[in-house]
Length: 61
Image (tube, rainbow, N blue to C red):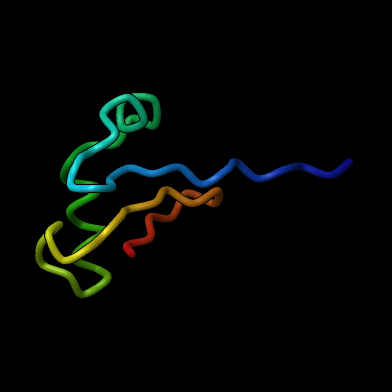
């Protein structure tokens, strides 16, 4: 039996956080800030979007 991965979802785009997705995924601002810093960014203004990937990682674009 094959298991499908969850679809990627936007946590942040167009300068706004997707509050509903953050609640559903039980993510805190600290979790997201840490992921942004790990990718070498210091501000949300430096990115277009944050995506929660199907494997649970957070990708900055």
